[in-house]
Image (cartoon, rainbow, N blue to C red; front, side, top):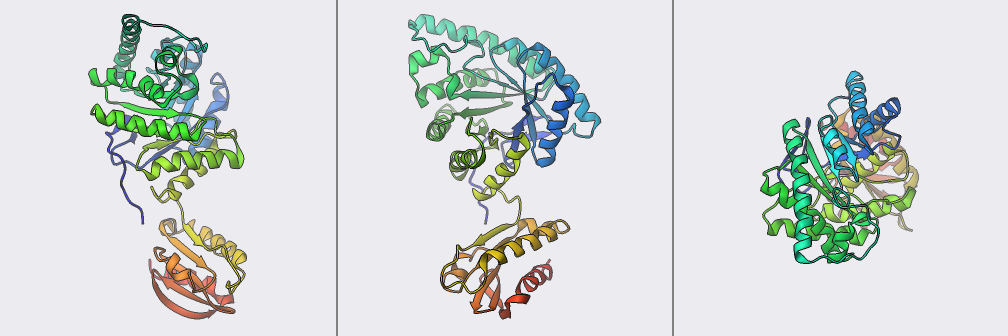
Length: 392
């Protein structure tokens, strides 16, 4: 069963995509090739979209890269992929963000280097008046950008990275979740005052505990100030392989279970399309939305009455084949349990169950009800599929 206990957020429009509100959690990734490589970016975007992404981000280092987004977008439209919005990822140069906002549906800016200089790990001293002047400078420049975005219906992601907090923020707040959150809130307060709601917010860190604590604190601070901006979740620089997947699952999953999160990106040091199946699986594991058939299976023990691992492989393979032609299979939860001691209870919320009944015998369940008893093991997988198919 899937429960909808998500934190309330308003809906943000990103081209044809909607994030926040009652919309499903969106999945996204980011290209890794040079944004001046038009054909390479188009091909990578297509692989990402075909894997199931709802949005693709591209790094946009300078004005040349921003202008070339126009060619990339045109190429995607020509190949039938124009409905998936693009996001320009901008650091250090607000002028680049201005240009990108006239071309793509969304622009990500980093509060740590939008108008503040690149971080040099210097301890700076500000009087309250000097600090207020820095905020005024930020305010004036950011408002120019907001006006461009408003004119072109461009959404914004205010994306804070723990590793790129400005020296100004660090000097006043330290390397703390409070500093990370304040870096974000400075920009959000301007968006609120200027009545610009088309904003998604993210706070990322490579340290999972810092990321989770900071996002939870941001939610509290936004609630105090009457804000309900949707959130983008991710553990940045998570790594590759098992390490990257585990860190992402713990960080993103912890927040999703709390009802926090409207779009996610699993950052892996792999081909970007590899991130999408992980993200979709994570959404399912966290109970947010079902993206494929879900299987419950026990680890097996001395009570197991059949070859559990082989049976799981055969059922998964058969179900995958059926799912190609019958979308109902993607909505199902199927239990595969070794014996009746814990099996029926542990899979009680499954739609169907396959449970060892005696040596060489299997019982089939519909929910909590045993509907066929003591089927010969050799026939049981096919009988399970027949049971499912008969109840469409």
